[in-house]
Length: 474
Image (cartoon, rainbow, N blue to C red):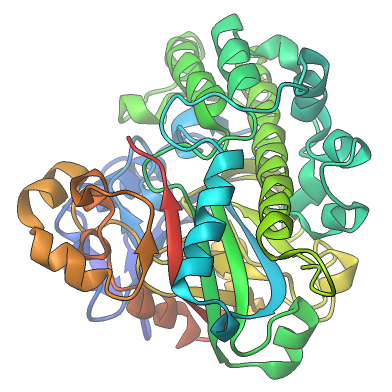
């Protein structure tokens, strides 16, 4: 029987039971705690705690909900002699968020101008499941370069600015990528989809900075009250999905070969130092770098759209990258003097001020932690603190689903959807195409963010409110 024991404010300990090798920590407040019981996320966290080499604690973030294998909002660290699991990274490898500053007062842009911006962005960035990229000059060579070195080659070719590369997690390149570990099917899907948004919860959102909590840090980040920002949420598209699908099967077979007892097929794994484990890491790194490159190419197209609509004369918009963070990733990191493979699935790295892993420009503040809300609700910019060390410097990645897509379609009415999107422009004429992404399908982002802020694991820097959102059809 799984048992959560209160262990301080907004913090619960998942005690060892059954085959769990280590304990877990779940972060929740009074609003979020009852929601944990509505799905299998707690059991999935316990399953992860039973894998070989797992290091205490496994962590459930405030946005935790049921996923495939590890729950979304789950963090699992493994020792060097432990395992690596595709299901503990997720299907959309390096699904992540990028935030852009425009310096444009949002109040100067009337809805018709916002609509025009949305339409021009859509002219350049294909949206929806399975859509192919429009950039005819993204050749096979550029694709193969992107999976090995991320956005660097794109910037060298004019798809961005050199300064962009200093404001991306891992500098936009996770070492160890090897395209030879990727299947032909994954290769084709990746080559076709670079520079596309996708569907589901992926979006491009025009936002306004509605509140500043830390003026000094906000100024360093390039955030000012009332300014227009652009948030991009997408990942490695079909490329990463295919890699996860391929290796979930490979690692399932490998577990049996290596004598590993798997509590759930979704946590198929192999020793990290095995051939299968090394091959998955090499393929996953390809998808990580591809996703960084994908968001870089989309950034380039957004800059083009702004120039088309708002450029000319004395008004030449400067769109600066604030930061880019990954949500679904496994990385070798040092924690407590130990080299660990940290799996973050629906979780965001949050390094504190002074940490050597921060980019130089953010060394004294800590890098921006970007937390998107659901469509129609606020997003946040945070930083991590030293107290986040207990979660391997990890925090939540968003609001977290409250209703499954099927339940949202069944339970949310047109009236509810329209009310929840009041004042926010969106790009789909038929509300039913967006119903499963309605704000009412997600947990309250304010409650989720405040859960860690209240116990000083994060520090709030700014709150961003949506003005217009671009989403693709599933």
